[in-house]
Length: 217
Length: 217
Picture 1 (cartoon, rainbow over the protein chains, first blue to last red):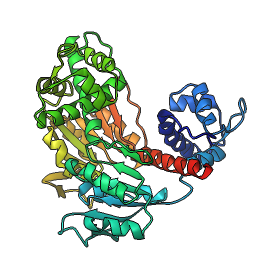
Picture 2 (cartoon, rainbow over the protein chains, first blue to last red):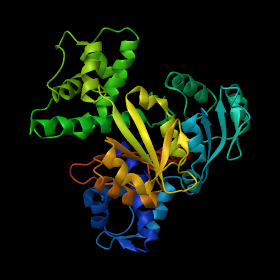
Picture 3 (cartoon, each protein chain N blue to C red):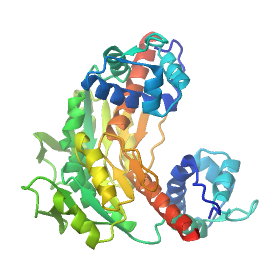
């Protein structure tokens, strides 16, 4: 673990889940040891970058001898906080909110949706996989009675910042935002923005860029 | 437009949708002109980075005088390919595939899901918003009769690479991949990986990092 109060740089934080994914696959395939070189080829990084990444956490394994796959996976699992479970609420019980609640992949890693919230009276009281949709105005009461680690925002774009402010007022410190409007986090709050529009438009940009270049050949 | 065959660097490609988002908001709020300085403050970049980004496309507007918001938005809209419509197929009609099909935000920008595909006989023939779920084995026939710009992969992790290979064989050149397994693109194919696991684990990492740092205070 890093000894000082400096946070791990963003690119390192983004690579940790990828290491975890690769190591999980290697472990499943019965691979016992992996060298920085092999890891670096899989990750598309240099071996020295990999060692640097791991040094952010005090380093693992021995140079030249390689890493024990299962042990390294366990270390990274802990660093990612996946050795414990997390309680989530989903705000906005539309298509995406319901789909994320229904998705079993997150539960497998210990992320449990405990409640959904919506403003639509027609949705209140309905259940998704046995998880109730509650009225948005009860969020304060709910969060004061239940310890929630992460709130997932699946509201329309124009509501998301207002919703985020209320969630932060309720003491929520971690927000996973799926609305197509980025939220900037005040100190002490973590926001992970998943902007699907931006992702689709980047693909569309590349598609268009190729078409333009092809037409110029 | 860039004059050579070199592709625009990834960070620039990722920023273009963000410019578009900000300019759309400014335009909606009746803002007529914006300086590089104002844009840079909104984007969290330096003014010189912004000018460099725009120079990748030949540059827009006049230094010192600022950019015409509506015109700049139109230019970037074209660069993103959003002046034309795109036809999509969704592979995997589970929760996420159905949610993405149901989401009206993509249609507003001209992205139309034309068909869904699945292997589950129980799903075949059902409709999402009037769009039919077709048997996966008919993908080759479908894509030879219909021009498809983008395939969206919403299959389980262990199926995604196999599905991607078949899609590429069918002539699909643009893939938006939501399965938690990254696909690397061969030359001539664009893949945009949206790994929701990685995103959630990055948030969980930060949550855990804060807890560790707090406990050390």
